[in-house]
Length: 239
Image 1 (cartoon, rainbow, N blue to C red):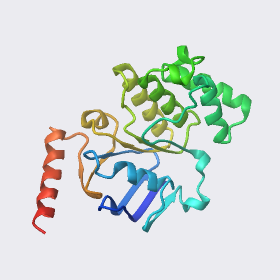
Image 2: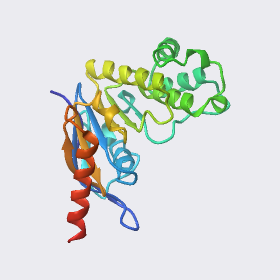
Image 3: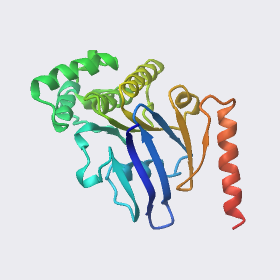
Image 4: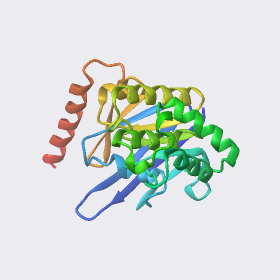
């Protein structure tokens, strides 16, 4: 089995104590690995480290077996925090630019964009400037840019933020299709019920550390999650 994301001992500390510490994490080809935690737990920081947006203080990352300097970034799709879109360009032009930045030829990019606009249900907004789109539709455009080139590695942070129920379902189906095709997907979310519908594994992060796992098919995931976090907080309090 191909390991799409491999991290060992990943550490990055910020002033005041925030950051992540000694993270070991992997995502296999064909797998959707969910990362859940409270706000400020370190999810976004970890994803930025994996994507080489931040440099670690310690530890290593490999993307498809390569160190960041040699990683096949054109085969990676990501959305971390806010979707990147040029407000004065329409949705379709934004997506063509994103495809070209991933090395897709111009004509192929045009066809690819038509496909993803339909897949995520935003074709009717193709010619509308990004600044005029609702927050939910800007999020769909950001997800489209991350998924349209059928990447081997997908990293998405709170992808269903601002999406309506129809958008959530379309996104869910889109990442399931890509995982079935061999992509490794890392997705963070605080919607436990939603990630349980797609995840093969769920890891819990608290205070910048991975503290345990949840069974996606287990009963009362929310209770299990808060129990893990509460027990970890109690252990830290008595140190």
